[in-house]
Every structure is written in structure tokens, then in C-alpha cells.
Image (cartoon, rainbow, N blue to C red; front, side, top):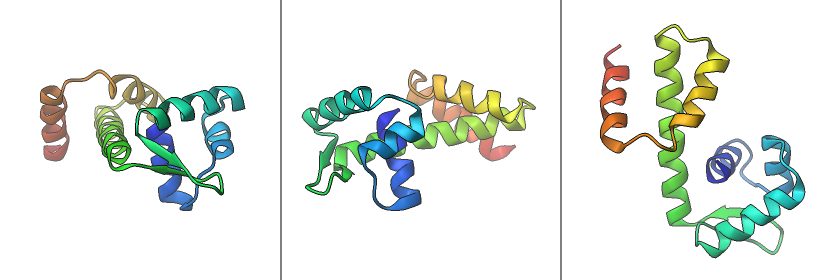
Length: 113
């Protein structure tokens, strides 16, 4: 979820700091700081001298894939008549565990609806 949040904030603002992630996600500064450290160690993001968070190629790929899943699933659930807040919350849970095969099938279904 952190990578996706950083990705979305970058699209909106162009520059993202840890405090922006805290505010967006409603998490504490220590929690975000720990996550940023783990993501940096994992090669998913870098932190600039100005405190800006920047996704690496690998981090960007994961974030884009997760964001696409979130967007497609939310849209599909809404088309099925699910209330938007519920659709978004359910998509957020499912996007991380759904297989690529099932997601691709749902994406195609969503495209045809």
C-alpha cells in the first residue's frame, strides 16, 4: 500500500515526502519511517537529500500494477452495484492477493461491461 500511495501522490503533486504519506494514509511518522526504510533496503525507492521519496524502476512497476488492480476492481465492483466506499475498500484488500490469471479475467469482464 505504501508504494501505491507514493505513486498516487507523485501523480497528484510531483513531489512526495514521508509526512505526505503519513497524512494520506493516516499512519504515524514512526510507522511510515520504518516502512520507507524497508522499501529503500528492498530497492523499491530512494530518498533524496530534500527528503523526497522516489520510486525505483522496480518500485514503480509494483506500484503501477497495484494501482491498476485497485482501479479496475473498484470500477468493476461499482458497475456491479456495490456502493463506492465499499467497492474501494474491498478492492484495496483484494488487489494484493488476487492471482494474475483471475485479475486478467476480471479486467476483461470490466472492459466488456
